[in-house]
Image (cartoon, rainbow, N blue to C red; front, side):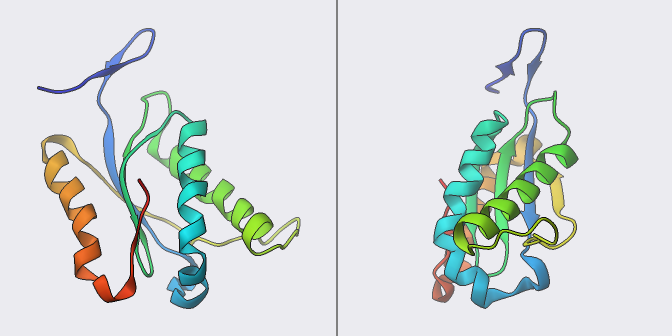
Length: 141
């Protein structure tokens, strides 16, 4: 049975599989920061009431299964996560304070609705660790 969530006027179940990458898919600087990026993404999800169902930081990309309230579009949510996390990464981890040019993530992202395949997609995200076991992936949850 589906576990529907609710707001004041709607019952909903909106789950998405999202993938995005660091700029130029650079593994070296991203690899050094991966352990500290997970908490930033979790905190930003909490700020927008987005539930992070499953997530892994891979050697050169991020996989997340998100439950996004219908009051936010997917584009708005991913834009918020990528934009705010880039600013926090530059400010807190790279110790750079510039007014412009604080890009960390590549333009764009990949998204698909989860639907009835939720367990299969969540398992796929979890098993990314086995596929790239020599890279030492990190769990977001």
